[in-house]
Length: 362
Image (cartoon, rainbow, N blue to C red; front, side):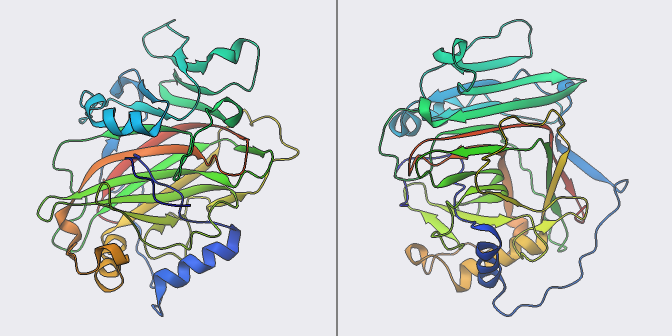
């Protein structure tokens, strides 16, 4: 795959072909480094809630939609200016891309959002992006069906549904003392990935956009939760650079061996789903828990790697080495399928998508 020339809010596809690809990622990250013991804080220790899943703190999730990459490039920043989240006044929105025309079919109350394509009345597998308030908590259901995606030459990324929280405040999880941590978590059902033809896969992932105001640099942190198919085998896990938007993309996974993120002891590991041949329905239980931390040391490892072994396009550029200079611009949960190789379906449900700032990882 090639870098796409248009803005994509989460370029998430740099990893994964089961354990073999994970091992290659760890080799790239470690370079003879030694894993050290990590100190975790207790659940009851102080932490600041950045994103809450409680409905009372979230406005009704809205959505933006782009059928083509050109539409996204031309309109994304303008369309999202009204969605700026602040503490206890969160404004989540769905970024929906590269599938057939979508419409809002549910106006029964002020909170529920049901987005589907026109064929949903006759096809249970129609594209679906749904979010609602259940027991006071924001929940979501997603189904991406490439049979309902327009034929177009997307060189990078693919049809996607991304739940996004944008911030404009000076949110800096990491401080000058060498402490600080950004934690993201959510519960999931059992994702179904069914490929037809030779579809190469996709992913479900957490993501963070970071910004260094002093240097005017941006990093897109991508943390794989579920790896679908074999999409990432040839990508060679490493830092990537998007020259169109001057963004560095950092891909990592939820595992004990990576230096670029810290797995919570309470979390499951990144899971590979090759092809759900026998599974046809998602579990009604949304009980698979994933939690990942980006500690001061994790971000410092990334900055050091950018200094000594950057992508060729940005060799010699200064990204600094101080995590305290970086602030959070946005946090997201993304579902994405590659169009390459033919048709496929991805479906899943989630609840409890949250983010916290703490001194130590949890």
